[in-house]
Length: 309
Figure 1: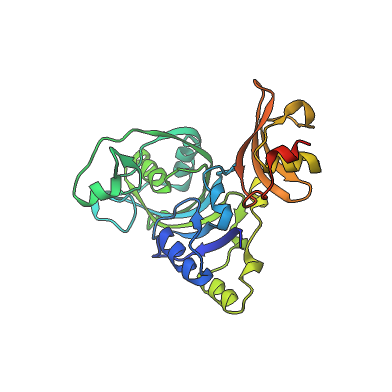
Figure 2: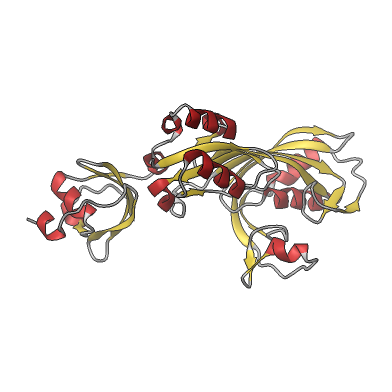
């Protein structure tokens, strides 16, 4: 079984909790996930199964979308409602229009400071481990991409609201809300987070842990596994001939002059036969196609020299 299982992560579970549970359900160890979700978050968690785990680090589209709740007037050590409240402030006078004005200047490529309660490592230590020891260390701001920030609800009486966020991978929504609170001068903490899109997969395609268990019990869990090729459909498609397929699957670098390449330097490679084989990079300087990742399982037991005949 190879491909992607889209799980609607439940609240209170870590992403690793989901992997652990699925290992028991699927009776296999080779699982990985893309885009870690905090325990309080729910929503799309792509779980890679079998050989598809080799794709986790090379996904071509890292776009995520979230629905996030917040409340004004508070500052916490974790930047969300699960932490200790450090400060409280009045937020009277803050309107939806004022929030929208602030959000309009927070999109694009921005520098974001990772929160202390995060899995980012400094000198080999995860920040949340240091934070739990009561330590605060200097962190380096990182460039992240925020495509859209939209206020979808706000109650000026309670300071509670909702945001729709579209962003690139590595963006901390908690930090976005904390930055908003600082800009408004009253503080803000995240109260809920639901990922509605990840790597081009919407929440509507997800199944719950309970549904995964039921499908496994019925012997039909394979019906929920999405082919790994779907992740790479955004890349230009390269179709190989039968002879080129034999060479490629045996690790032979194909000459670019022998291929019908479209524009671009990275391709989704399809064999004949064999279907989706993986991804490859066009080495223009040396005129060859280099295998980036084989995602179709082990290559056939054939001599590369035989493929050249």
